[in-house]
Length: 381
Image 1 (cartoon, rainbow, N blue to C red):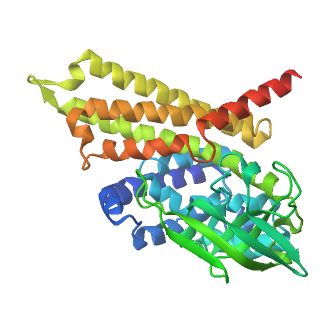
Image 2 (image 1 turned 180 degrees about the horizontal axis):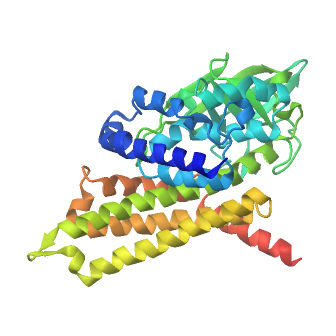
């Protein structure tokens, strides 16, 4: 994409976020939903397909371009980004990277325009960061597969028309082997979507359990047209998703810092703005320094992702650092606001609760450390 095109996109999204979404954050929290008009506007701007290929109706952003967009998307409630995040990220990328040409042609244009929402159904009660505990099965029966099992914490499940479901097609396989991916209609017989989970934060982002009771799908719904593609497809999607989440964390931290600086400049104690107190200044300075480090890290890792130089070690490192950084910035933001920071009507309180999840989903901080260490040790050998 030409630099002027990207500049225009970023500016348009920046203005939209600040002028249309930020003023409605409390409404989104209270309703636990994104207003329909915001969804329509997001679709019209191409946000449901920013990372999907241009030939299928997407914007086709590179990773370096995508993280810059994510900085802007992260400036507001994470629920807004989540509305179209699975289409572009973990669900959509399964099709981009491993779908057959027929599967891409059928689904990607619908995902890119927002006509269809997809979700990524990998996590189970005994298979979170480690898929080796996966219990959902898909048994071949003639020209169909029969899927049985359950998934949990599935983002956008209740909004989706198609579910990217991971299941074991080889019951004898151990660990990550024998896992395949399927495209399942949300309204297929035997599919049940549970109620929305009640979460600590991130209101407006819906997660639910999924249940599969003998759900039948045709051979054409096997991603890639071959068994055992599932694990590779999931890991490739998650690696890209981790870098995107790191960029969202940067946007979240920027918003918290902006709120904190504005408050410190205006709020007074003893007749002086609290921003004149050195201990308050120290908290603002630490947050800015960490935010700057995370921003530059994400941009650098994104460049190496685009060249193919590093698509594993860097994304995990960025996700680990940026999500942990966000937690510290959010904590300082509440501290700068004092007692007011604990009140539900104040943005930093809302972002504080939202921040906690970034260290968990798409691979916990502990899992990122394992990925990083194993890659380093593999290089030593």
